[in-house]
Length: 264
Image 1 (spheres, one colour):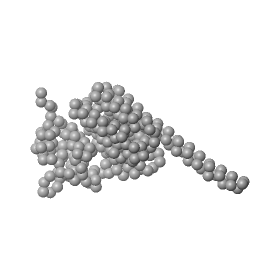
Image 2 (spheres, one colour; image 1 turned 30 degrees about the vertical axis):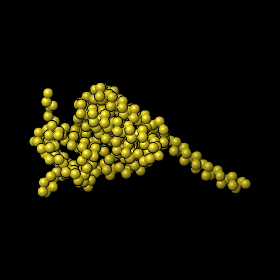
Image 3 (cartoon, helix red, strand yellow; image 1 turned 180 degrees about the horizontal axis):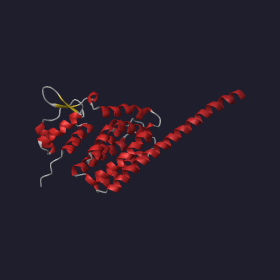
């Protein structure tokens, strides 16, 4: 039986997912219209409309002489630029991760639930591939290494779920948050890697989310996604408290030692 033709929003989301995943990098030319339409199982008219929508948002640009290209970072839409400007705060401001976690908890439970209700076979395959990739990176990476690769793969996993949710508004918000999420995840993993059992726990949590989506269990998917974020949040809070306690202890010792020297 012939597969149903993709809608314009689905095409828009799929092209954008290719950009997020790195299949199409900034400056790359999109494949020829006929080729891209055939690969995606869509009519050329709907593909043109999808590309027009992406161009209106600054995700792709048309250049004189022919061809459509992925926009360079300085050419992206203002909304994404705003999120990108927040990324240094997510990395460097003490406690800013709490704001990031708050918005993630608000969004990602529903994203996972919608994915469980709407994911097709291609979506499931994409989520599974992304889950395997981030799991392998989490379990193989030395805790002392900067976890940029797992962080990028983690974003890819969450964006695969967002694509499967098939909600254009949620997807665009998640796309705008991409850089902020990457910064947040990298920072989280830097701290969480100090706890040896955590990478395996994160991998297991990702797989619970994926299993619920695969089984079409929306409530279970929502619960698994939120529990995952609550776990990350609780671990970061513990790390933050331990760091504060260590700082107080070190500060106290600095005051005690000079007093001992005077007494001697």
